[in-house]
Image (cartoon, rainbow, N blue to C red):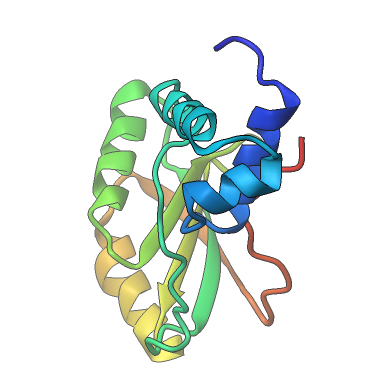
Length: 153
């Protein structure tokens, strides 16, 4: 599956909007019968275009309303330090996303916390125990204006 046609792209957009949409509804929306739509979705999955289906949880309803983006500078740049950092970060439940970035910082973390006290405890007791970190910079989210995984292509 080297090239996606317009129907494949439309299926991906529809699934990106609602992963619970039925094959029947997808078929209706793309003007095909059930079987070809089922086969196309199956192929999109097997070729890695669809990684997995997830439920977007409302963190605020679970009392995790504080979102923080944390910029990380490592102490030094080498393969061991970078791998150690990633391994340590994967164990921290408050970290929901981690990106290796370019620019002034090495990594960007998205962190959910219950409140400022919880975040402070996270920084001192969990993030502070990650020995490969040289420095951090926290940016607190005041309002989430857009949150989607749907890509317009």
